[in-house]
Amino acid sequence: MDKESLFNEDIRNHYFQTLDSASFYIQKLDTSKTVEENRVNFLKSREWYKRAEPMLIAYDNQNYLSMNAPNLLKVEIDDYTDIKRLKPKSYQVLEELLYAEDSISNKDVNVVLTYLKVRIPFIRKNHILYTQRDRHHLKMIRDAIVNIATKGITGFDSPMLSNSLNEAIYNYESLATVLNIYEEAFQDKTLYNQWSEEIAETIQVLQSGNFDSFDRYDFIKNHTNKQLELVNRTAKDWGIELNTSRPLNPTATNIFSKDFFNIKNFSLQGSPAINDERIELGRKLFNDESLSNTGNISCATCHVKEKAFTDGHPKALGINGVELQRNTPTLSYAVYQTTLFYDGRATGLEDQIVNVVNDENEFHMDLNTMEKRVMENMEYKSSFDSLYAGKVNNLNVRHAIATYIRSLAPFNSKFDRNMQGLENSLTDEEKLGFNLFMGKAACATCHFPPAFNGTVPPKYEETEFENLGVPKNASFEHPILDDDPGQYHPYKVEEKRNFFKTATVRNVELTAPYMHNGVYETLEEVVTFYNVGGGQGMGLDVPYQTLPPDSLNLEAQEQKALIAFMKTLTDADLK
Image (cartoon, rainbow, N blue to C red; front, side):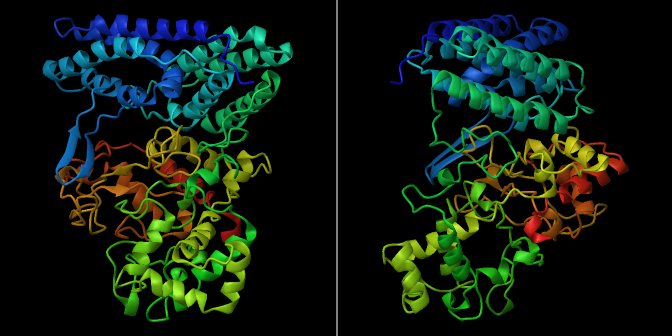
């Protein structure tokens, strides 16, 4: 029987200590004090917040998101009459204010302090750490390990100070405290000792590095993945099973393995299982031109397998060669996005197919006609008889196509095979490129591993959108801002103008030209664009740009290494 954990009180007390300490130091901040004194107390408060973070993520995720929010305006839209504009009041905002190069705004600092001084005690008072099970606490440990590897060591939440390695240490020290509380629960004392040794070694590795030169490749391969194995062994030792109804597979022991994600969780609830037969049926439908009004285009017309399911054009071409609004996005790894299209107007793959079918410049059909054409095909009818209980309806047709698209995420690139220990073929330049991607170049603060798209770890329940200030021309000397409104429509919210979904970097070697408008033909141009600070960095007026406008100061060989790494993300079956 899944009983309440015997260690809830001890873990609750640890949680209280971390929150009380974070609150103690935040209360000491005051704009009447010197900047140096406030910085000292900020760092102490932030340290204790980081010790609380694993428990916050697990048991109070909404407050975690609030306390950890980037310094970016958040716009929540329910309908035309209910639009909320929320300025974050988080530790990240406070860090940027206290360490700003120009004069500090006491007014802005006070706004953030007023919030945090009230919010932290509120979180402590309204905790839910009463009836947690052992499996909840073990999942908390697992999520923290994933969070550190995929987001914590990238600089995501320490953009000014790049204090990520120290903050990862605080996370691990908190995990060590939790495991110490659980020491008597281990049947296998050797396993507990292995945990202790592994965390101590991990902390030592983090202490010996600096942000720019830290070997994140070695860290994830030889520490993160080892810790995921220890989680599995601990579950067996404690006689528990972790919840399997979440976006992550709780038994996966490698972040870059195909089974890291729980693919079922990225499908429609209650939909049939993904199997080879449904994938093959979906592949045939995907390539079937008879499902379009003109009978001469299919999904594969714009999503060409050899181009990683893009088409090689700056902007997609519809019926009779009509240029569509945006570049054709890759379908590889699209399953691991929670919204589709560059403007996010579709909420899933089945929903995305509806848009394509109805669009007058694409399939120019309706779902009923598509359903009828499938029903008239005897080969299809036989497949639907066996795979969908004879129900040939538009939902099942869309599900079959979506199932094929969901299969386009094999995690079998050169990089994956090296991370999985199947080969040892990465060059020093390629490893450097990964470490730059995850560190100095700040790519992974938006393109999160392992899918390297905008779906945010460790919950993987939300896909981010960014405003990069992308130009309509490829000139870095005389750029002109692109006029595609992005998420501005349909609600006409100015703060969402020029926002587009963060696409995957996987298979990027094959998906040129790049950006939502296909403005850049080469990866060299794309890296240069980011290196100069996007649109603002080139001098364009981009009021709500989310990309920092400062140069990344990447040297020529670093830019070359970055591209070399990205080319290792090409799937084996596409080469």
